[in-house]
Length: 172
Image 1 (cartoon, rainbow, N blue to C red):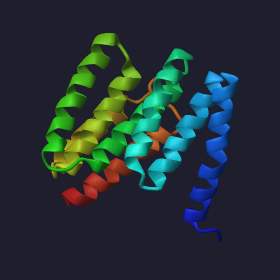
Image 2: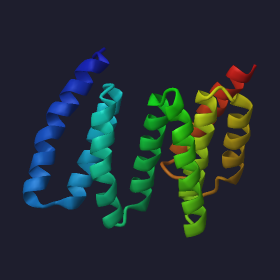
Image 3: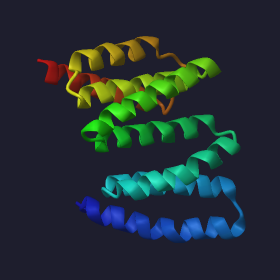
Image 4: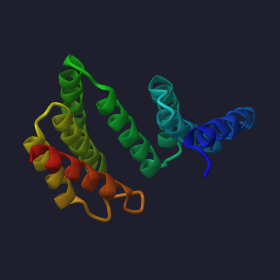
């Protein structure tokens, strides 16, 4: 069995020249996809600041290219990473930011991003120790998930169910 660290190192070594190549070619689609993958690998390698910076470059490209699902999946990853790394007062600040994002999503009629943001708020409640509130929020998202608002071949639902399982276990 190959250790994960070897896979991460090898993947990063392959992605770097790929990203350079896409930049040189001016291939924005290839660049956006490669950057998204690099951000995922960086987050797996605990390089959180690098991952966030890489996603900050990838997400606008994905949006410009009309890849809404890829963009929103990346935004969900960013939210999850930000929640996972938030500490102390940063948790409350992040909650307020997500509440603002939720209001924007509702105003814009972006149902998928509304549910993603609700999921992020549920994870914030868990991190803050409010597992009953987390469960309520995550169950609401799960109950409102449909074929239009879900994405990733069930990945969003799997993440929701995992978050619910953790919050339920912590709530007792």
